[in-house]
Image (tube, rainbow, N blue to C red; front, side, top):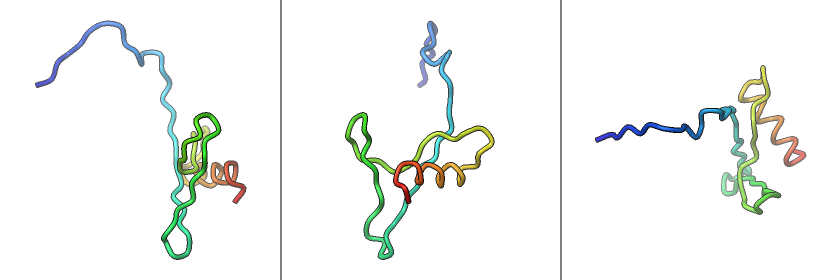
Length: 70
């Protein structure tokens, strides 16, 4: 059963931003390309936020180039 809660909304003034991530395999499809974040040193897929007017594919390509140089 659902419960409704009323009161101050945490995300009321939040902004939603579309993002994209790229999954890149090696030729044998045994390994994937990951990047290490600078802010918390965790490993993640290359990706990021979409710019206005950009497609998901364009976002993936731009972010991979920015983050890996490939």
